[in-house]
Image (cartoon, rainbow, N blue to C red; front, side, top):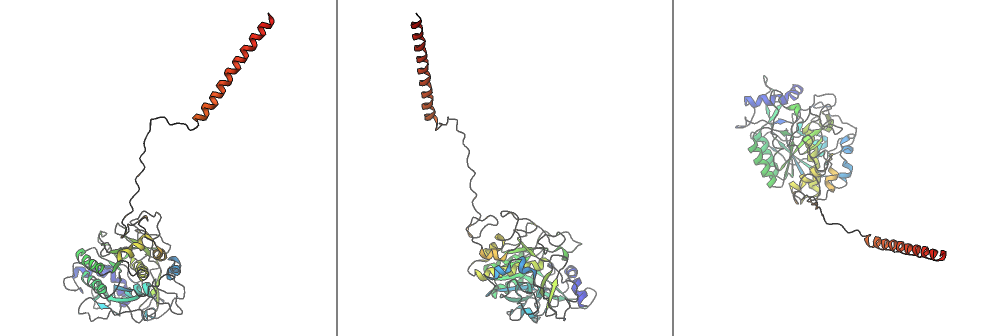
Length: 422
């Protein structure tokens, strides 16, 4: 039953929104979609079967994490994971969790349980501790994780299973607020919603005012409702004070079948074949065939934790600027609707020097660079003096005088010749 529930979770979200089942009171109108479901369980991804992946995570080399870790490992920064909960029993998360919160119902459901595996995978990508026998490691392996459970259990359509979990705008926004109030500097929201803009805007603004940066999914086609038109809004990621993250494949290419594009996209990160923590207590490699913006969002949240740890006195806007300005892109001064300002590069973000003259996103401190005015072309009709004219005059005078003397001497010679002949 659990495997069937995990496979159908994304589709059930839309059904539950219509029926109003399993949602907090007053929240039926808006049901955000998790950016990616957990892949079907296989030998390596089986709840309750703890296995480890010895292969080193490709993200370390792809993102240049060794260079980044020489400058920051995320120590002292708490990252809230507003999601389906985080499995406190995972080996990679021992000593990594701080007290969390459940934002729906009476709050009695533990935030350190996770029946969907989504929140645990996100937490592992952000801050998994490296352990013997496993190549899994988080982007910020010394950051703390604050589990904020905003996905509420709900009956599976036609059945009585409580294994499905769905979020609501109310529970997600409440989780964002609580996280900011309790010291989370980075708030990861691996989902997007096309409605309830005012609810999300209020939460993001509040978090921003407390010095927190919200990082959210730019939208994932794999979990979108195929019976509905493509969404045009992606909350909370597209709101001011938040970063919207798109996913790219393992090799850095963007795939139209995986991630949404649009003017809301700020930055991109890998979302395919993601080695991370799982509810088995061990590892799993998720999304072998597609790129999930859920997991890309977690990668950027981990990078943000590195930045916040190194620059604790900077603002959330400055942290976001470091990430977008330093991202890898074809043209430094241009963003695209597919990957925003480019693919995240943590080491470059940590080394960035903002002098206000960098091409790309405007600096929150200096603003956009003032373009230099094009030089005005003036056509001068006055003759331009040739610096060689004096020399030419002297040479010309010399030639003229010499010719005159030659003519005179020639005439005198002829005159003498005539007198002699007479």
